[in-house]
Length: 513
Image 1 (cartoon, helix red, strand yellow):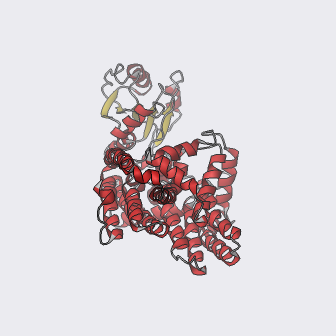
Image 2: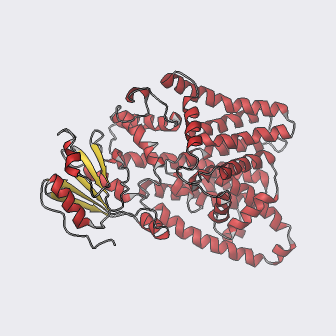
């Protein structure tokens, strides 16, 4: 355990930056695909379409039919990607996979802010050694490099939150009005990326009110309002003619869909925090966070964010990501302060070294696997195949076995104007449905999602579209297979890509069962 007890580097901040950068660069180059629906279809797909196919996205009022209605999404983060794709196209860098390496590299650099700010916050709350260990965890924690290069708004907003929190504690004597104002600005920018961080943003202001520091509360509140008013209101005024139209729609939609997606018990996120940092370190961090409420200006925003999300029925694990680094910093520094003054733990130092040894082994294995994991590989690669195919008029997504056709990431195909027909009913009249399409957009490519009952599915499609020629068979990535093994609810689909008009699909109906 020399890494825990050895000599600290001469420049810890520089060392942590280099240590954190290495796995993030690996992930940027070798961890392709997307993690969840939102980090592709709510960021990459609309931004890229605005560059290459302006009429594709229905987010914009001039692309909607009838009375235009906001989508409930912030245009700030996706707008930055639009500008990036516009610049990449200007220098003739148009291959989607290469573009995504650039996107992931930029996110890798952006995520270094979390490590650097996290170390400096921990240094204000503890000693140099504890701050160094905190920085190491933020740099190398198993899921951080992988998620840092994704396009999840829940992760992209974290650097803004950390910069704001650093401003709140950078002066040991307490934050001055300038620091408080700038903290509000940083946290206000986080709200522009992820609307739900407004619950976090309320925390520092409430802490100042409880401490009767009225000027700080006003300065902080003004700082939060500045980026929201300037960015959100300006964009919404341009698009919809009224300020804060997207935030309003977001609130209305979520209130109307509190249990549409998930309805988890109130303690779900507490259990998540008890496990996410790897037991038994996670228990120590959990204990440390709830052991003390100082500094209140950092503790309260995390608590409010956690409490409100725990109260809301719709719970998805990624929703908690904005507070994961700060919860760790507060909890770990508090735990180390407790452990260093506990006679029992001082007499049993070997036990803690054993715990950390276990955490190190598990963390290292998962870290390496995630950094080279291609998430949603079969979906991305099946679309990338079509980029090389001529005359792609439309795609039939045949998923009549599971009857839940996944949304295809069209960005990788480059065929923005092709039609997409999800086919999930094995008893419906496919030929009649295809006949409704004009010749120019009638699907001539078939994606068989999964290999179950493939022979019968292929016969039904051939009867409607004619003979089929297999182009390729795309396997899922390691991460997709592992997640499916852990929870079969998650899809682990092999996708067979075929073109209508040639030899038939081989009978693989017995495979994959």
